Length: 158
Image (cartoon, rainbow, N blue to C red; front, side, top):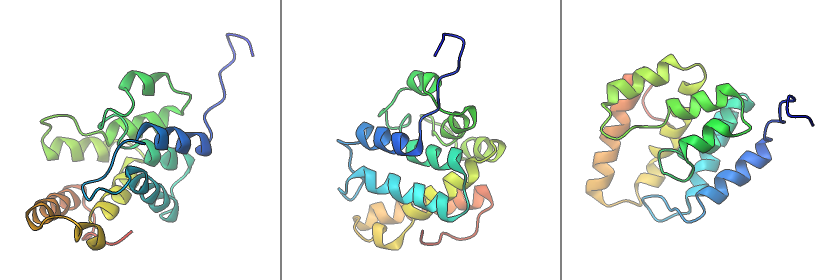
């Protein structure tokens, strides 16, 4: 490969391994390995008819937000421009109003499906049941509000 040739994009298997490695030390709010959430979101995107760019973005959807990978890494990664745009669209910024977040997701082609799958897994009653009642109530309201801002139906299980 010469300097002028584009490098090949990461495969979905490579993206999955990268995301699992980046989040290896992370757990969700219930103490489960974070990779379980990433897998569920990626499978949710696949089940909803998402394409490879969206599935790759699903694996990476929390990587920048959780500081598992840097935004600089994402910019330089061998990923499609669309995958990068989706990841950045679903990356919530500190102190960002929910409406601004929802507007960015809706304005980015392919991002809504990834966020829909993320919300479906986050709002899964079985997952929420493992949380303290006050946390469960707060998150249920948060997810319901985001569903409404995005124009999605009521939360459903993944």
